Amino acid sequence: MANFMDVHSGFFGVTAEQLKEAHERDLAIEADEGVHFERAWLDPERGKVFCLASGPSRESVIRIHERAGHPTAEVYELVVEV
Image (cartoon, rainbow, N blue to C red; front, side, top):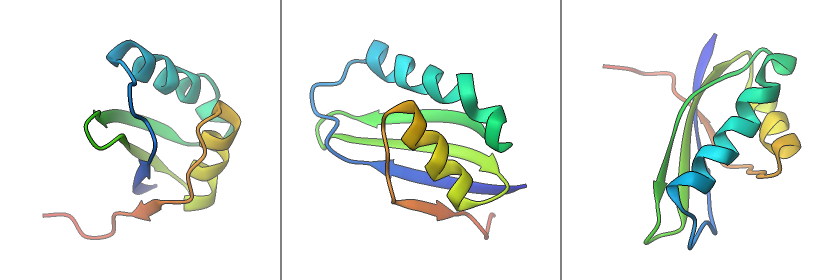
């Protein structure tokens, strides 16, 4: 399994509860693509959400986010770890 970090923009005014709900929508369907979303972070000042996931491909992460209602094309494979 590869690791991925993705970035969502435009999340101004989002609360912690709304972030949790969005993350739970991913978790509810992640197995359909063999993906697991580990964690999500919010930077409310910049309207950014960051998600850490593992899965078979970048495309599988993109598909789950699309189906969960918060699409992003900004998904990075994390190939070097220290």
